[in-house]
Image (cartoon, rainbow, N blue to C red; front, top):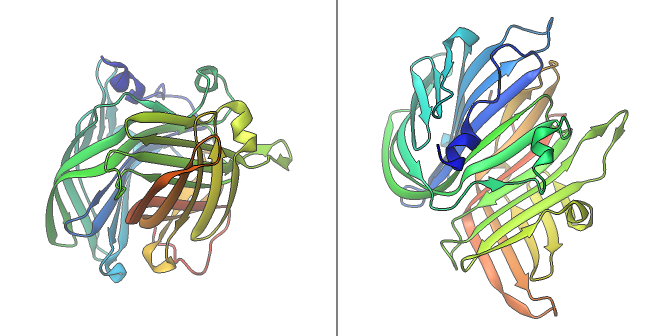
Length: 335
């Protein structure tokens, strides 16, 4: 296997309790003005909380008519989960996720929502490891691990969203693998690879707080930018504390720098363009993700001497999510 495929292999041993694992894929189709977020997940709660289970999630965004946004989810007993060790394959009931393709169908008869997809995707770049040191993936801390085998992917295929058939080709997106024992306390996250000025540019950012015993950590901020074929990392241990970030529901401003580049940016989205969904930790605690895949982003780039080097923008092509241990009345919870 190539390293990208090894990075996707399931980390769960099939028995451990107090564990969760997520594979998510998201992409934007400019032609139909739609965006998608699908998840293949497993959760093995702590003993006494619940029996292990796996889930399929599908979230649909319509930039032209947000009233058509919806989310749908199906839960299955853990014996409906299958995976391989000699190649990357995750099966949940009749759905399947492979290294370069996936398919599934989820329906909620009560709410009248259904999402079906059959897609292919690939990327030319290696996996992106969000953390600066490999030991952070091997040790117990941090409690959540994240990497993106397909950080700048192109998606092609077909989707059926509540009966609407949509075919697309070379839609920009991302596939990421997350695993661990506990979600962060709260966070803001974003990713964009559909910039007007440089279609091959990629940005990702994360502002998170975690619990350190009885207290909250400072905001830990990491950022990444690929622009004009060059990678700029703002994720060293020191940068986690010195990068600047401030967010509230629907709006996030930030700044980061290294020896080569400084970036200042803002991500924003309307409440109507967001879908709220419920996450559950392996210990049973809840948190709520307010997510949009049609957010706006503006990045301004500066050289080390402060000279302005340009701008990257996307009006409705950025992902943005705001996750907290409480709900926000502005964004109704869908699932």
